[in-house]
Length: 189
Image (cartoon, rainbow, N blue to C red):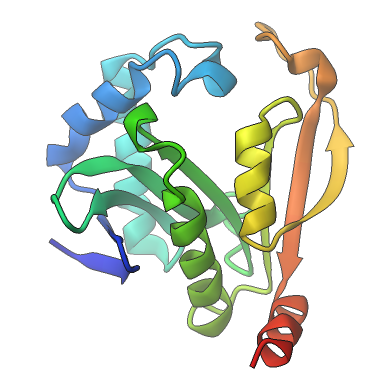
């Protein structure tokens, strides 16, 4: 197991091909997928051939990727966290993302791991900007962004061929720049 990062309660490790079932279960939960697909599960073939293949490829390309989140006390897979290249290639910008099993919601795991990823991005990985996007109506995800130190940047609208409930309210983007993060670190010491 290749551990990327540990926090008080979690470890983030590299995904392997053996994680396919974890992803199938996670993406098969309608509550987890509510703001991503309107609750529809992601097909197994897509998870295997596209999602997991892309994650494994990212490990070979550079420091930004997606990691399996595991509860340290139990060893249980609880979801994933990501700091992915901003436009798929730009490693100076990292897009923060998270997707956890519903049973893990409300425990502060996403915020705990997001803060640790942001710190690592700015101190070890050469990232200059961390950003995150979600549906404007996804209040829980927006709270994680805010608690992680990101600040609201904009609301924007995309065209979706198959819109899900809430799409009409748009998407929001939050960000944190390395210089701002560093100032906050200095003022808190």
